[in-house]
Length: 163
Image 1: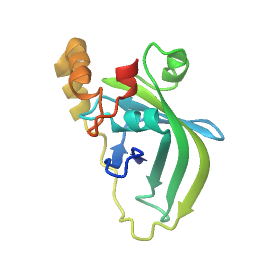
Image 2: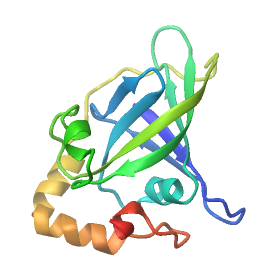
Image 3: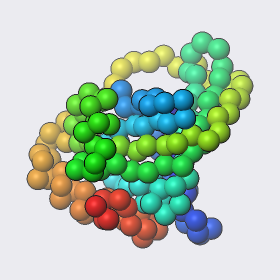
């Protein structure tokens, strides 16, 4: 599990912080990472990256020694059909309702103690997203993306709107 944060340039805009799961994160090189992003009720990260590129990815240790790792970077969205899609998507297993791949060029890494992060036991992955995607079907997922994923909650266009 990891967390992704992004924000629009506007001081009145909404900062976005999203938890991510599944087997969806990859290290591409010493300074580049990517994660497979599934369809959700919003598409804030894509809109923020299109506007300003800023992204922070955070990992927390929920067992073992306490530790927090933050990756600060400039990111971009890769959509199905983009030139790099085949290369990048081949690094991940098939995840239903895949929307896009977020790539970040990391320019700063920070660790901190994590002393206040509680201990948790991993109990497994939820199957809600898979069941939801299967119930929608491919046409339903495309309609959902058009209805819910073309703009941020602040009205900024996402890469899906541009693509």
